[in-house]
Image 1: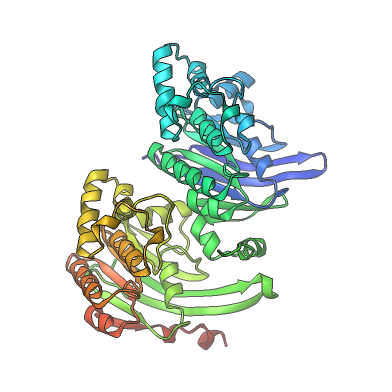
Image 2: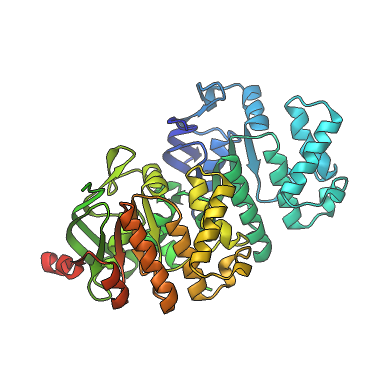
Length: 258
Length: 235
């Protein structure tokens, strides 16, 4: 167990002209920790996620990441090539729409194998074996390995996207509404799968969701955002069971009871 | 006797921002200590704040004022101000909690629900499962249920899963929120025996028991929560 965070974020802000994307966001993320970022659409949570994953550059603030050699590197001072390498190896990004994270016209096996080749694997047999292993871990039958994701259901595509992201053994995974747009039963299966993988692999993850039930199930810590600012943060069960900020109380009281 | 948990001058209120910000005081001036090897019981009528006190001690409710000092990994931690990461560590190692209701996770078997806290503490999964089996057997949960997710179990069955999950570890402090509420007499006796074993092992227990027989059987003393009524001080 290490006593240093994996990611340190300090006073991160992103403005679109005079409009606020996200403002003054500060937090640390430790290895193995899952942080949920919740809020309604337009609250800035996706902007924050895109800044953190360096898909977007912030207007001000810093974020430093502890590399595998133990050294902290300032994300926004890295070269584009360095950032891309990090993205391909040590990080994963699970998009809400699997089509954004998959290559829809190559086979499922190739979707998983491609990430391995990007980190230098060249042995075809080994890559295929790893792909088969990962497909089974996300509950996709081996006989679907040569099918294109176009032929998959939404839930299967999402599971394939997860396999593609996790195959390189990343330490940090970003997820943008990973269960959005899926049927409830499919969601439950995916959540359970994600929960198991995150625990078994000791992944750190930042999960953006508007679904408080998803946050409860997946995360230990939570940040609530409104109008680009963090209005409340803390242990997930504390924030949900004893919400303090007016906006969090509104969110929690708006959940439909089943 | 070591005192792993000391609560001093804790106050809690809820501010309902959706109801014009009215403030509902719950408790104030909560002070007590729990020694290793004793079982203290929170007494008082419904609504007196018993569950809120337990939830603050577990970090589930925020604390407005006061301190909750717990012995954790050789040091002292104030749970009232501890970071989320510290609270998680305290839950993993020091303070266990048996809630009234089981929050089920889809597709995880009863056996693994029970074994999980031990696995989180670094125990081998198979060792943890073996211990989980013996606890579930002790609590008379039919063996055919062990491999099933508890979501469809009856109230009493879920509660036994919950109890097994809470008792499987060797946390030095254990909080019990009505662990026997929906159990039959036979299983209540099992829980009473489990609590006695924890006391003998030097665990500090704090519980809420509405069942008077159970309370008389386990309580070393009663902490009267009405003496912490927030109105008394606030008004």
